[in-house]
Image (cartoon, rainbow, N blue to C red; front, top):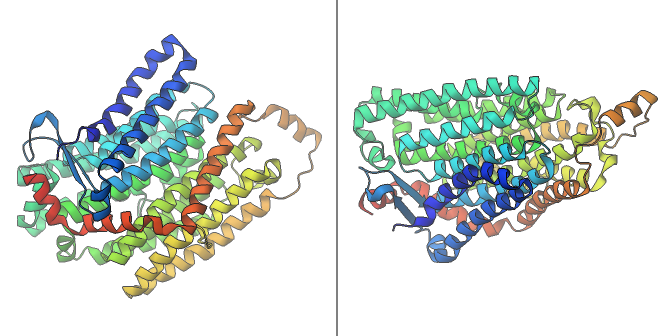
Length: 511
């Protein structure tokens, strides 16, 4: 079924990014209204899809397409929305909505440029999740790299520029590998439509299959920060503004997990992965990566890097549980993708508020920040407890299902990693909670530093907006912690989309 609302999810943010500089020329204050209008149109568009296709979403039969130029696949470029991509679109855009509201309160200079890059990220994120062909997947990934790299260096500081250069280096290497994989696929199969590739990939010789899979997997492992490519990612968080780190850790890592699922199960086929004996290797790599992420978080004395290494631990765990290729594994993995998206984005926006009172992100400078604004710090603690897996928060529900999936599959090392990650998180998070509540006795030099280091959010409305978004993320974690069963139907329908590849192929090529 042709549905124009699909392409609007890409065109609207791209158009918003293009028009913002012209709005700036007319009236800079009008820009914020235009930014809000752009993101509200996105949410309205997704809401209208829910209203119009509610029954199809509930019974798992949602399948919408848009053929660019009217050319049907495999000859034309197509955008595809099924239950899996719709669920990811919904949670990604909701989190991006929160972050852009937060940015209105946080970004104090060059706002126009920030919003241009941010809306490019929204467009590229939606495009990457909707695209039905490999080349456009590469194009949207490169758009994400360019825009996010520029945002890392947004504050124009030496550490920020250095972090951006490292970020761009690793992502350009990964992007080049994806482009090479796309070329190899086209030369061997004569098509780039994902459904057509899925239909014919098994016909390739095993050596060519292994080569193409290895290239795509290496690129995605770099993008996700999975072992052996895990050390570069947390460094990108240290010097980035809070809204940027919220996007990097909370949102972009989940888009790459989505692409990993789409490539392995839809395009390549999990049976091919098993035939090449890659499934056990990938499971072990993911578990080891999760273990290292938590170990390095335990050793970190920088709150942003700690959260970055913690993300590596969680992404490795999600990667591992979906590699079990069981319904329980997918259920726990996708639920934790949603939970981690809101938990980690919430933690970074809370850090953006709390760190305004500190000289640096170092552990010693975290002293007393909890006494400056107790409600925000309490929200920060709730989000940390959810990351640990404390009931009745959403992080507990998702970790519980992951643990059960590992035990059901008799992957006891996987179950150990889930428990190990939670126990080590108790240690490294409690350190910062305790430090935040320490009393601070200011000397004369400290008072001078206080004056010099005036809070970034000195304007009242900015402070209110930033603290409100922190509470909003916390409320989502608490609400879905008690009511995670609201996500049951979307999760099960998404799993059906992953497992029923034949239906995807038939509907794309014949629909």
